[in-house]
Length: 175
Image (cartoon, rainbow, N blue to C red):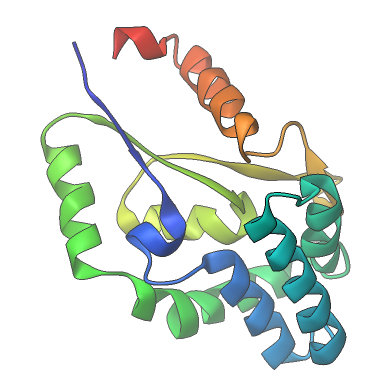
């Protein structure tokens, strides 16, 4: 029986929160207006801590900037983001942990509420093939600013995990 290794990303494999850092990066680049963005983001964080966050409302806020820019711009910015913000947050112990599980032949995946635009390059940096994340909606090669399908948040994480396993022809009980 193969073992399954699921890794959380933010404040686990990373010494920080990739979603928050992406927002700060956008503020620093002038992509969003800092004062308004940070104030609204703080409100959403407080709702998250209180357990009252409306994930769809939050995702509308967090994904909207993606819809306002071309894929080339976003890709260029993400490369800068990885170098400036993410690489310094990667814990050596986290790299070693992921490597240990992969070398043991375990089925490894990162599962996170943060959207896949932000997290897919991070998963690649860790050498993790499988990412279960909130998916931003795309149409005609551009982000719409909306979420596609079920957000990978709270009970949605379990639903998305089950969908991913079914897509592999697997079931959780078999791992």
